[in-house]
Image 1 (cartoon, helix red, strand yellow):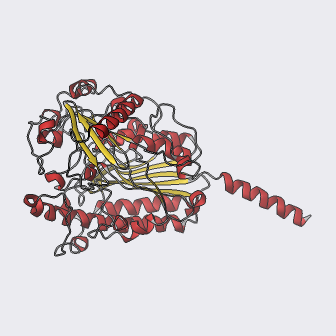
Image 2 (cartoon, rainbow, N blue to C red; image 1 turned 180 degrees about the horizontal axis):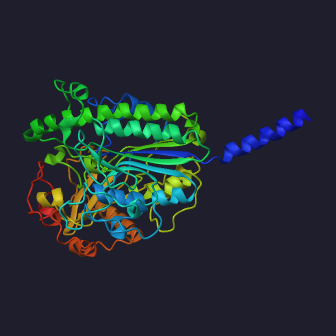
Length: 483
């Protein structure tokens, strides 16, 4: 009898273990480009803990931020939709989702949900970034119960936030990335004691500029260090690039230690096997590659991001990779798929959970849609028009509203210094067809940017009306296509 009871108990325990819903720890950093890690071969990066994470993770090596700028990214993350659907075509438009959201879907499934850090989808309807330090009401928390959030600040050493439904401003102690990580670790420890799963999104501000504001011990690592610049940084921009990169990498070193603390907190709960740990970024940073700065532009330094997913129970702890260029709208469906939760019908992105589990293979030439529905902020000041494009594992093709603009063979030209528009007509035609198919699937009519800005009620926004500038290609091969 005792043996029979033991066996029955073992079966029940195994069944319970098999159906356990995984926790999710989603670490989102700001403006960290894909190549800036030790595991990606960057000699400047000191990221030993993220490198260790990569060795235990599924790595989407061609992950992209299809619309590489803050608010549109977060709109897509929350809804699983492209910007022309959810409406955040420029920064500081308020998200008013039509359909279920990321936090709402997990909370509906019985998860304890938490959000810590930068939000940036409450919007500033006057178009002057006026609500970036404002209290975000509960109606705009979109399913997140635990709440320590600021709409948007990059004052990392005096960083404001609001807790729950209290409109009293508070401030993180010291450097906010470290303080927010400490709070996230406490959330993990507390929720790890319960029987219900949790979903935590930690949205960190660094390494977004200002670059020189990391804690002194991290800045000291790079103050006098010799740095290697990317080959596509023009000689005339080397000094500025070196100055900014010292601060950029210092922020990264600080956040690398934060990732270790988060991993240790998960391990300490005894639930690491059943925790999906995601590390990614909202977009990259040109940092003077192509003679340009910041984001929104379709070159790899801007669009390519890290995407590491560790889930030991189902994926083991050995590194695996995919060439599929997963994009932001795909994250919501994929996370729900990995957690075996119902899909969100309003999401447009693809569910890659079967690919991650090894039940599907990469397509022969997978592709992601690149899009900038409206020219604003840095791209407007540089004179670039609205564009659409396609990124495959090998090629980048971009068409501005004025016509074909950029075409690169990224295998032969990894620094994207030889534009093939008008020089390889067969390739260009093939990429045009791929782009048209992606636009159709996304329901994107590629209208003039002013139409989307009007729909978003953002025609008066400061960044949309910035003075149009003009920059020239350092290689003399793309300026005439966007005038």
